[in-house]
Length: 392
Image (cartoon, rainbow, N blue to C red; front, side, top):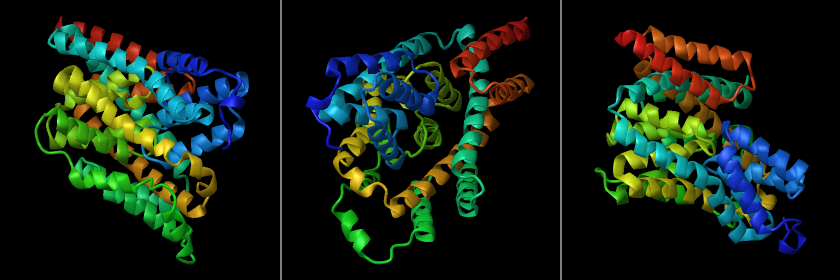
């Protein structure tokens, strides 16, 4: 990737405006957002070459962090290097961050009002259906009929259901196991080569050593969400089991209903799904908590994109690295599946919420292109109507 500013057919201002628009109107999750970038930047505008796009997508899949945000950062890096990567990433995340802050303020002010509770009564059940459908699609696409990956997937899913938490060492172990099984190193030369490349995973291990202390201080929020951003592989939904284990189970910053409401907020806002961290941070410590939670989550993915970018073309296609990513991805999808079961046991409390969740799955199965925000909106209306009928 030797492109530079002089070869760009667009200005940095054009790129920033594009990502502001995508962050404002880009619904559908990481896969859809990545598709929009290809359609707009590669096919329509022809700002980015097919080769550069594929390299960015591969790097985003390899490194931990939200895929769509990393891909956007890489698109900014292609012609405008660090400045482009920084401004493109900020422009992409800022619109949804502001929307989540507004929703967090409304939630805190009015969560005791019956209509707010009724809205999330329906939305929370629909979110379970959306996550379950996404988990199924991810399983079919990334695990398929591969017996080793299926075993990794099932073990991780069972562990998540059992412990109601996510074990990052299980993720890393899955990657190493699949790497050794499918592409074992024939000599130490490969390891010596990798040692000269940027360390994609060692920084996240160092973060795990420090770990967040107990309590609700801003420093603890920053540490915890930095660890979340450094450890999460896969789609935006992969952060859900990790956050549930820490935010609800370990630290008690939110209760289970508030956590599901936070996931729902991420679903009804555009941009990266992991922007739910800002909502969680706001409920925990106001604007400062939201800002630090977002910074902690997105800064690692920024580093994991811009630091290895110059070297990725040389090392990214190595079969050992690809095998490691495949193993970690299977484990991440298993954790998502396990989280669906854990959250469903607590959110689907009656026949109405079960019906909403099952209907959501059926609709998404039948109508492949229906926008998820529309489902969330309909579920909110149904929740309101049900609460009115049940009260009366």
